[in-house]
Image (cartoon, rainbow, N blue to C red):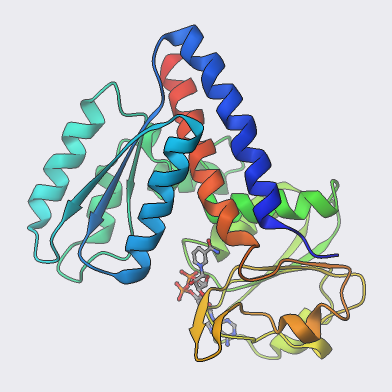
Length: 280
Ligand code: NAD
């Protein structure tokens, strides 16, 4: 089974569009998303363009604030403080990575937790790891929704997460713990990754290593979610060797067309959730 991220994301956007029409008639206002983009990173520019495009498609008021690479950190921080106070803005996202001279932690912590659509603010991270309701980072949320397309009840499954980044691996592990999975977090220093993957019912690969997971790493009934987006000479590939692994497992996401579109759809979802919270 190939898990179709494009189709699932399109359905999520369609549902959000309807929700936003209802919200507009209730509150006479629309959710607003501001994205801050610093510098000229090519991939970031494409992500931001797509975020803007799909925000507009579902009816979210969206704006992108662009700053040059050499911008002063204080200008970004002041802008965030201004956006925090602006009632028309439901969500604020600072596109990562930021240039080296800007303190990422300081920038993330400046965003009001209730407007933190990425779920990266320490308060939201803490809530998630305590098992409370919180803003869930977009990519892990997208992965969970794709997993649920295949298996509604994940209780008791052994989930192996490859990668421990704050963006992907760690929040993914927390989400799957909440789903009653037995979670193994692996990383670049893990010994015998293949042996660990061989025991997994679920694999979420977020290492940023092209075709790391091979056909003989997976068991027959496994579900494999490939977060990786790696530029290679033969095009964009995931962290999973799709040709090999798809022949073995029960279900797998492709790259592209798997997790990627879900990340943006989940960002829109988080923006709508922030809007609803601010009006409740
Ligand atoms: P990162 O570099 O911050 O973290 C990578 C993690 O993988 C680290 O914890 C590292 O220890 C681990 N790792 C590296 N090599 C490994 C190996 N050989 N074995 C086991 N673990 C290993 O990366 P990130 O920001 O989490 O992104 C990971 C991948 O996901 C990248 O390819 C990125 O482009 C992609 N990504 C995709 C989406 C999406 O929407 N699909 C969103 C964000 C990131």
